[in-house]
Image (cartoon, rainbow, N blue to C red; front, side, top):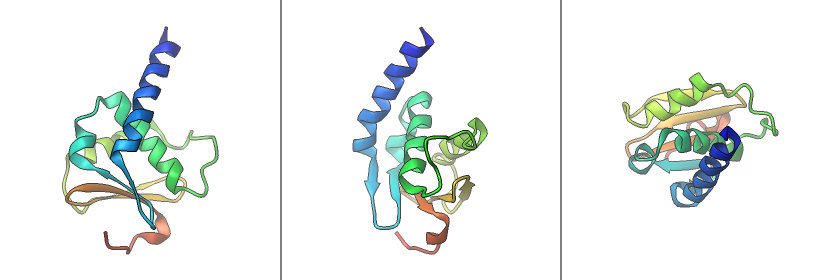
Length: 112
């Protein structure tokens, strides 16, 4: 039953990805207001997907992307502008006024 539930949540997250993620030259951005409106289970999967899109170091294994780190990103969507969250796999998440910006750590000085 849990596996079926996970499959449904995964499907919902995939459907939302196309609507929420904005591909850029330096990473991806997610509109904060839309992201905050998502069910938490869907939001966590979108964080993982965004990290996968940006990271050059993350292969299929996402064990270092712990629940605590994912939760920090989800909660930051409702937090202060200007925050920076450093995730494993060389990914930074910056909280801008309208978007969460997922970028490779080396792209941290890029303006959006």
